[in-house]
Length: 112
Length: 110
Image (cartoon, rainbow over all chains, first blue to last red):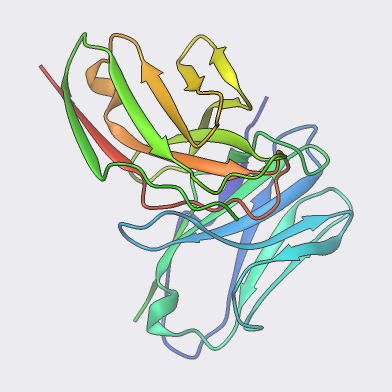
């Protein structure tokens, strides 16, 4: 049984570019959440998707957007990248918005 | 959301029991307490969750006093592989907007 899988594992972009990160939830899970983790900090909630809709959103600008597909997989899009967007982006899945959350290993994004 | 306070770091020797205490003075009636473990370059891993008294699983125990204003994660007989950051979270029991602090960095040595 595969857990939460994310791609790519590492990514390097330059300021102003756009990036798309992908996540496949754990088998049987239907809810996907995205978190941003800066170096030395705890993960920060970006948003959560359930039934292909954004259900909750953290304190992130509109440059951060997402999508959930009918197979429950999800994408995180970040436009107009800033140096401060450099971080580990974590995807987490759960069943019906419940706990516990299962996290993937993340995508390490570096913005130069 | 209830704010949590936990020690920044702790050191332990292999084979010892480690207790990490978390303070959450403003916990609400419908809040649960959840602990996650995170290794470098990996996502957090769920350890244990509780509402009151004591919860035990194959990995850890969670002690919650009657006033629920604090909780203690107990790791029996730690090994080198338990070196990680441990996060205490207070949440409503759903996957919504989990708030992570900076966690407790546990270093286990021989």
